[in-house]
Length: 272
Image (cartoon, rainbow, N blue to C red; front, top):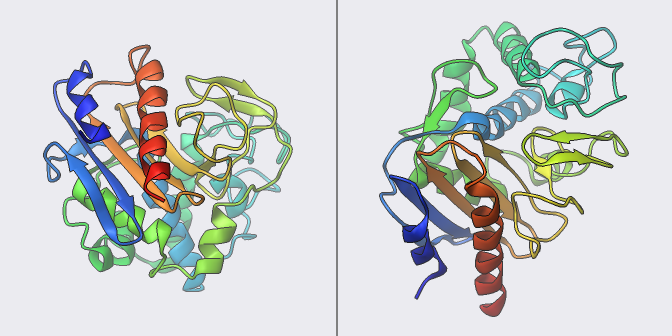
């Protein structure tokens, strides 16, 4: 029996999931085209879109953005000092890893101004169209307001495993620790010292507790969302996992997510 079958026991009305390798979808569960709210998983597709803008020369990672002294890279890595949900400055640049959705709103504005294209349209043109992500839509703030399906995010996860849109070196940089040594909080999982992050991608490192499995490698990167959604990519396994639900993240999710992810890792490891 596939590890995905255990999702039938989750206390959610709907759940769709997929395990992805460099060759594509290895296993899937539920309706792959059902559209779910992504919440903060939105940040992954937004970050990739910003990186496309960097590669196209519209912006550069060290361009000023956000609070004085901050750059596009600082905003992507939650190192700008901005508050979570406002543009108030709570810390100096590079002092704390303050998870900031407001910073992603600024990023979308910076790219839109530089390109002359509304950010939602730029995301569609730069990412969704080339990957065939027809159900993915950014309909509001760039920190949390996108919808998508497992089928679409499986295509995106495959791009993260074997990049075609971004240069491999760009993705490698984005999924490496940026501004190392900064402490901070992972929403719902407490303070971590350090709280490692890439350019829009959370990096597992040695964080505990964490929403990925204990068996996931420290290089694992991705994001989870308050909508009850997550996507991770484990470079050591050369595999990824997407799970989308319609129940908001809460105490129900913490034990189930970690346990399920460990079972996925175990299954993938046994196949190597």
